[in-house]
Image 1: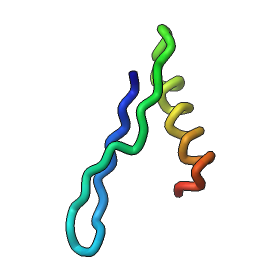
Image 2 (image 1 turned 90 degrees about the horizontal axis):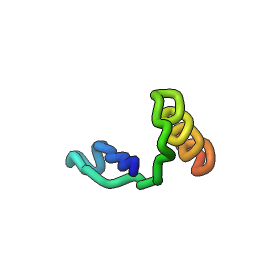
Image 3 (image 1 turned 90 degrees about the vertical axis):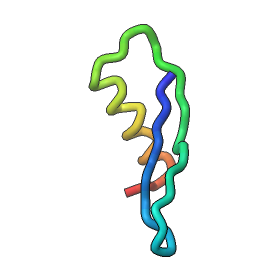
Image 4 (image 1 turned 135 degrees about the vertical axis):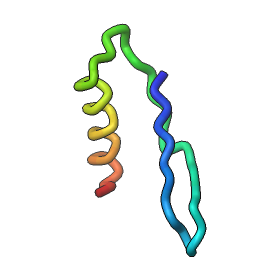
Length: 47
């Protein structure tokens, strides 16, 4: 399971949230993880 946490500033306070959780296949090279995160960002139009 890939858990992605984010940390950001909102109204002058540091916030921490779970962005998403996705299951990982048995093969988990860096490129696979990068593509999962990149696909999520593109789908939700996050820059």
